[in-house]
Image (cartoon, rainbow, N blue to C red):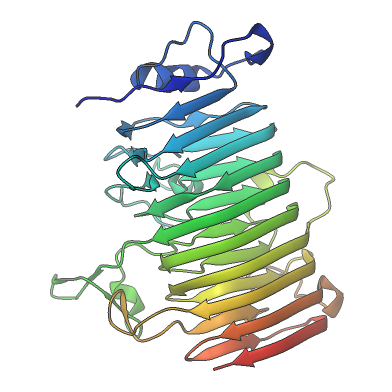
Length: 348
């Protein structure tokens, strides 16, 4: 396979990262870059199959200009990983032929939430296309994500970030009990869905001061999930002593379709979700292309089901504003405990 090269910015000594992760060096070599003085900015074109997680350091920008990066078949790794870094960006731009910058899960590896971590299998979060943990000042913009093997873009303990102009196309096949493969999902037959929990964007505990804007496409599970729970993901990556809270998040212009919710807000187990504004949410499902029927919920706030203990109290989900939600089925579902909710212009 021919690999297009990376374009390198001006190689001034001040622009060279003090520490370049080996995986990033290998990636640069794979696509033909001169790695003798790897700059803080790389521009990638072409299609490339990725067989290991690419670690992104601080003060680093990756530009994908029509590039199509695919997780290799049979691998159990993220495409991109950033941990404890600052000023990290993945920026997508159309290529010369108009093709979008694409992160692609490729062929599903069979790992799901019920078998992850068992019999030698890795944890489920290795299936995220990108996993950012404890990152301050980040941008992921202009990227198309498809065939995600689990949650597409996952953030734990991240702050001061923007997620803009992102589109998704999850695997939408289902398998009948007779083994027939169908090109769409039947909402009343969850067990038949081939790749489950294929979210778009997931903000978890510790995330704050983040803008999410202009999200489109189809996700099998929630398109944007803002969920604060004391789960295994948090126990693994969350800094000890940091408040179990998500706060100061804006979500604007989510025009998409989903088998679950377009926007999901949840806090249990002592977690809190505070000061979140959601506006301009539209269900774009046509009832037949990716699934039989329409998105079940536009915005889903809280839950009666116990995902963690103790159950939420009203102040755990507080100061939430939801406005401009249009969905063919249930535009807004509220359950459990919450306080100071403002909901306007909600229509089904």
